[in-house]
Length: 115
Image (tube, rainbow, N blue to C red; front, side, top):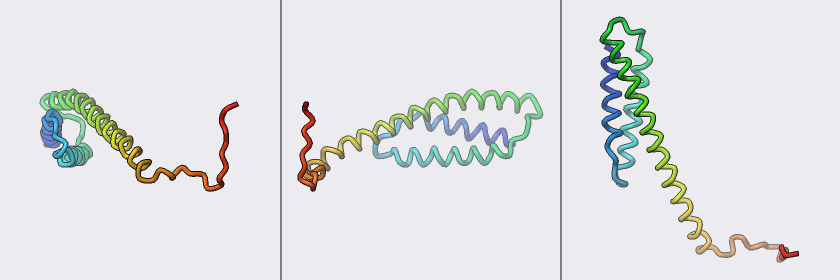
């Protein structure tokens, strides 16, 4: 029974990862992924060595689907990291515009970098 649950959860996760979310849906999309991964983790602790041919076949399919899931999660988290870095880059000029004297040296010293 644990193999069937694991297979169903893995298949549901793979189908969910096939869909690309909009910017507005991204948070719910990631929350569902995290929920499915947590459920899979709980079921994985109950797995014992497969006892018959059907469980072995499901186990092999699960391993194949897991490889695809890992690739899709890597792509997803890479795009999230890129979005975060773009957001941070866009914030930097805003900070400089709002406070242009942030890098001001209060000593009044000026160091000439030319030689």
